[in-house]
Image 1 (cartoon, rainbow, N blue to C red):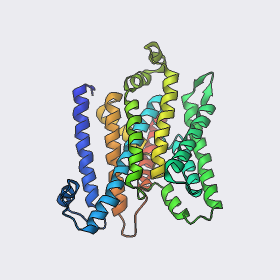
Image 2: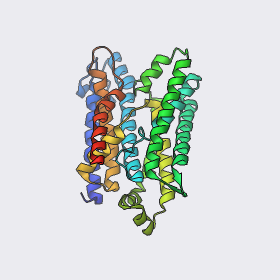
Image 3: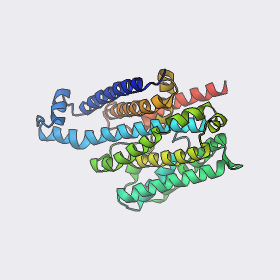
Image 4: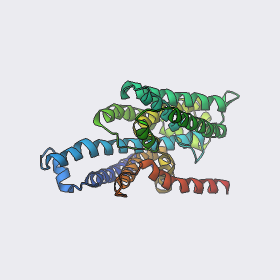
Length: 332
């Protein structure tokens, strides 16, 4: 599909409308059902709900859904960028170990009793940065980053940080251990407006910068040599985007825990629907990833009568078979 400015705007607005509809549906769903009309009027400032329903809507569900949309959109865009940089369909933050490194830093901050900002978020940044240094250091050869080695290095570093997280959990007697285990499986239940307010500008500024690199990403997908001949400083672009996107991912991971496979499923589905032009792929990935995670979280809250499921469990159930399908297709 040709990515003209009018088509990008039209499709983005259409997906934004879908996202808003999904968010409204999710606001009404849960053990305490709320009428969609009443929810809309309450959000517009008309006080039509009783105190209990208003508390559920504004202090529990709304920040949770906003966080889910930010996390899902960010992870989907990160998947698009990593797959373009590495030219590998299996690349995404979870597979590259960045989510694991950020989670290790965040858990260390939680166990040390640090405040969310700047303590836990700073520790999560540090964990992601350590992952980047390790993975890029291992993958560097002849002054150029070898993309296949980079992906394999990410898998190894992810396994290392998973073991380090299990070690921290095994030696601690902290009463927060149950919450940490739930968070590790991906959980949006800890969302609050103040954390969302910290996360929102970071994500929007970072993703705006990423969108500015859409054309160089298109050239890189055609081949690094081609991109170099057309004036793209490939190595600098790879390092800049790898570090920037990893840091944005670490910010969302420290609030949501490890939610895998969003950055794998959404980019591949969208390439089938809208093509591979990053000027169209990046905005559609954000809106689609946001809607996908809001739907998964709604299902996680409503599928069982015995409490909530971690949303990361649902994304893994969708993503695991999809990952196997991609491996089989790559081998063929």
